[in-house]
Amino acid sequence: MTILQLLLVAVYGFCLAFICCYSLVQLHLTYLYWTRRRAISAPEAIPDPGYTWPAVTVQLPLYNERYVVERLIDAVASLDYPRHLLQIQLLDDSTDDTSELIQQKIARYTGSGLQLEHVRRPDRSGYKAGALQYGLQQATGAFIAIFDADFVPQPDFLKRTIPAFTNERIGVVQTRWGHLNRSYSLLTRLQAFGLDAHFTVEQTGRNKGGHFINFNGTAGVWRKSCIEDAGGWQSDTLTEDLDLSYRAQLRGWQFRYLQAVEAPAELPAAMGALKSQQYRWTKGAAETARKHLGKVLHANMPFSTRLHAVFHLLNSGIFVCVMLTSLLSLPMLYLKHSVPGLELLFAAGSLLIISLLALIGFYWTSLYQQTGSVKQTARRFIPEFFLFLSLSMGMSLHNTVAVLEGYLGRKTPFIRTPKHNLRNRGDAWRDHTYAITRLHPVTLLEGLLTIYFGYGILLGIRLEDYGLLPFHVMLTLGFGAVFVYSLNHSRRA
Image (cartoon, rainbow, N blue to C red; front, side, top):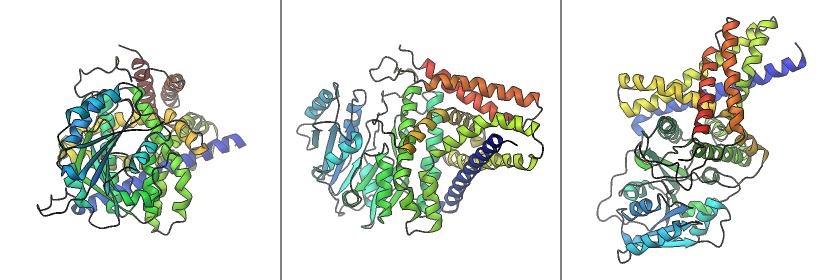
């Protein structure tokens, strides 16, 4: 073998090993979920009338949200909580008519007893993190509830979460995201499929196993003193929520996750919006890993907690490994049939099967918790899992670019995900102001990769080697779907 061939095989093997280890960690979370189901937090019982409720500040970070801001204000105004203890901060960095809509809505609640504060900053420095930190300096509550603009919290949200702060070291109570527009399209259904697994198996498994979890940026409540003790909101990563979560937990603060408390929100319906969101999440996770991985490795914590934290921080790196494994899979087919003596090495490809089985267990558990029926789960799981995995693979190039930028320290601005107030299939977004219609140069490469992996299918058939055939089918379908969605969603109404 040449040095180049050895290098390709080594990279391919390393990526397969990382994917397998990541999948086994997810499988362990599935095990923790099943074995500790009885300890899963139910909604906290609303205390007796004599309970002393603490002061709460609700922070609503806003930037150009004309389609959802009124709905958000109405939902927060309906929170069932003593009004004299409730401060609502509308942290408004908008540059369009959102600010006027906020003012009009506040005027309608004049005389209601609600403390609605329209907070405007001199500039938008620090983006969302900067807005939250600016509002924190004026917050009067001992607890800080945070909702993004597309969320619609239930009236009893605070009365279900505040009692969960059962001791002084609990710094965060996070709740589960629901989906207002799950059935809007295939794209939203597949997003819901993936997010449900995170908010069912992953968050619960980590929390009940005593491992680090993360505040998800919204639909949760912080103890104000926890934020201050951990150093406040910082804007040096695109995932200020994950960053602060690790700083707080490394300082000994405890987090609680309430799976039974749901806060519904809107899923991105357009590929451009989804890509923007995925870019921010994956790059921010990579930036946070760069910032905190060394601290985690040297922290005084159990080995299992450290292991889970490492893979938690490195989870966006899975896209890099998927991308490299995919690109190298065709050269590996050629090597397998042209260089003798590599049979044992290529048997390592079975790691993909182990990874697949682990992920099947992870996502099956999530869907089963919704249906409660093996038959219904099987009917939905097979197509949804196949399509979700294909779409995830199709997003791997776009997300790999984001992850590498994060690891290399290349800074980019915080781009918020557009919200369009979509609930029903007929609701339109193409003619909305915030619709992302610009095509990224990566889109052309996604189209070329569709052809590349389509050739991989033909190559496997020609060589009569069908081991990677399902893999190449999913890659072709995934990259093709991302490419077509990107082109189609770039057109205006």
